[in-house]
Length: 174
Image (tube, rainbow, N blue to C red; front, side, top):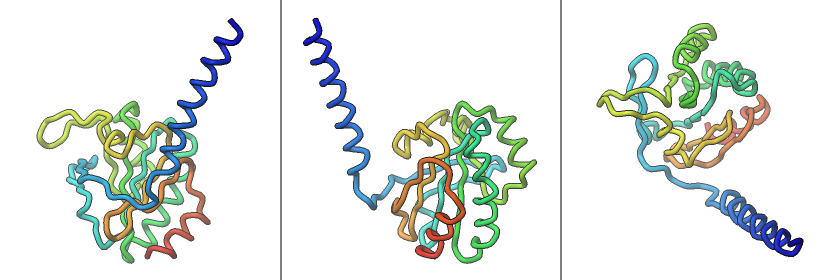
């Protein structure tokens, strides 16, 4: 019985390590298929329409303390660097209540577009969770994808982006 449990544990460990290896060894720069979302204000957003710009796609939730903590950093970066080619798109997770997202967006006066991952799009087709899936199955928040001026994902942050990290990123790509 003990040997059987050890064998099962080893198999589980190898599967987990294999999954982690795939995640951490994927290409450093990769292209995403075209993406489209609708903001809270009804604006249709498309990638790769933001080519020739640095674009941050930030997955977040109003129930995530790290997400709430990093929003002032993203807001400040957008306000100071938008004219230099920075775009930010915030995508709230499908489990986030639309009323909470809308209230937070208004309360914080977020200057960049916010997309609900639970919104019905302009074609009246359900998009719940599809935005997170399109970006590879976002599971943790905050998660931010950095797209260069060619529309390629060049970096991904899982967890809060600290101001120093964001400044370094902006200096490198803008």
